[in-house]
Length: 99
Length: 234
Image 1 (cartoon, rainbow over the protein chains, first blue to last red):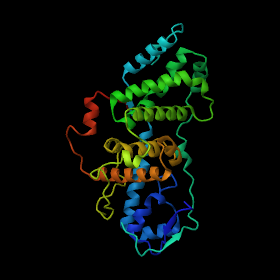
Image 2 (image 1 turned 180 degrees about the vertical axis):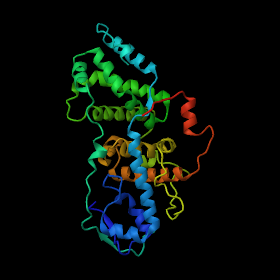
Image 3 (image 1 turned 45 degrees about the vertical axis):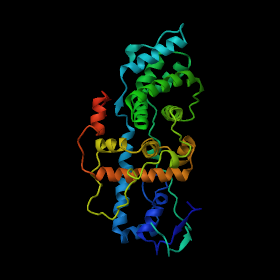
Image 4 (image 1 turned 135 degrees about the vertical axis):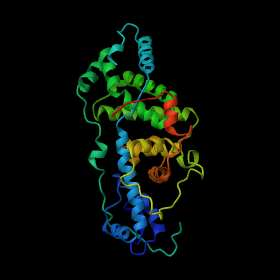
């Protein structure tokens, strides 16, 4: 972030804030920077703070999607077994009961 | 948004926060996995079965989120595991096995999309959504907040409704935990582009999540159920 120019926090408008918002989130944590100047700006601009809270909520809840939700049909493993058997006809096929 | 009259200054010392380890270390070793990997490297068919059983849901869910299509997601799951079984000898354990498998899967899905003609070289130009899909900039509305009101099902449904470019970057970054430089490499775009797409994705999700639930055949849940998708309890 150090090679990017930001507006002066003392004169930053909500429009500037929106423009630079992706960079304020760029630390990869899903939360905006903890820079005290930004935090002061958010304190003085509740609408911007509300937006930040919403985006942080979305990023936070996205982590919950990491745990798998869906399961492939049994045909997928059958197809894999068939293909592996074609490629290695002399090997024992993987056990279909193990899945 | 305009920025006239704003004195632009160099950000002197913006504190850099390293990614939270918890977010990017979500692939702890699984009991019995290491032994299964070593056995699979020696061609043990039972070990292949075990690895498939351990990872099938996560790989399939990733494919489904990236592709938004059950049939294609199953095809790519199949390809990912076939590729895994063919290449498992090259796994050196430098990263978690599931991280390696996810990267392999993402690369296969992206290759598949390129073959289909979806040019990922320039996300901005090729899979940027239409004006209709572009998130609305209405951060002035203070009457509706999401905090505390986003449930997993609603978020899953909203993610499925994202335009492909947004969805891809959101899933890779916020769900899978890849960093912008990794996503940029995978999608052959700039890190700035990845950041921009992610931000737009989150804005669009905010917009979708603030809308009242709309019943009907276009709803993702209905589509998922109609297609016979098996959802597992987690």
